[in-house]
Image (tube, rainbow, N blue to C red; front, side):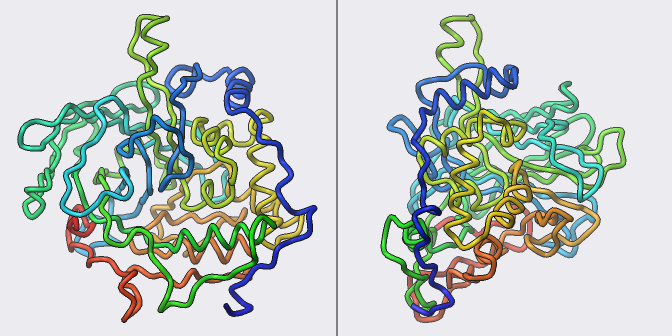
Length: 425
């Protein structure tokens, strides 16, 4: 390992010394402190858990209710012939879907993009759900297709709903592109299997992090010819939506938005106790590699994924933030810089200034937070590693295209038009 890619274990004062608090206590305290309404969290189910390429594990979790990645970008930055006013939203789920296997979306869950209208690029995220794009899937038929309903909610009111169908693996070369009418605008949707575009030597990262925290040997990342892209060869279930900016703006002229995605499931306690089919969030993702990179304890990962962005900085969630800060200290940051980084990345949402070219890390706001969304081939891990380690680590030595001669890396070329993700393996 080279010295530039190795983080030494820190003194014991920078090691994790945080008690593994009970998940229910953290979430319960957040509920009480914030008075959260139905649609976020109103009770604590026994099945609560988290993901983002498996950041948080419980016995009852199914992979089709696992978030992996969020991408948001101006379509014109992926396809020069596309409209300058359309945005692309990508929600990937079902990590480690093996080649030539059909997987399905859960018919017991809500998959949602949530959007806040932002006054300007430097504004503090509020986590307000100004616009919600909500997907609910039916059971698969004998051909492997699922119907789904997309409901658009703006300022708490349903503005439109329409139905479409998924693309089964057998129709991968002729995908179904649903053109849905949502009242205030038409939205194009693809839902089905595609190759996972994410790339990261995640196992080596966990070894590097363990060494920095003093709970394992100090190691660095592997050289490019040895580094392993853990997502290579796998597929994901993806929802890709082409959304006109006007639908997000409503009656405003906002051009900057905060975006995050969630998965919520029916809570059987609601039905038994209150007579309704209510959903509870147990999955959430904004920026890449923040929660799974900084939070170590499984219960804390679960807690973080079960609360809305409005609760990220609450007193009830303070133990989770403290663990993230301990990781930042272990990665070589001093107290002041660790606090600055936390203020830049929490609340955890992905900001996109739609007046500028898309690309993660292309530009930061006054708080040091990325503000240009995320394209499919953006090397978000290298950007994040460089920022979180204050330049001590600049790469995990994995790329989208891969390293010649290394069979453990490399992805298929993206397709040239919507839905853009490469065909499934």
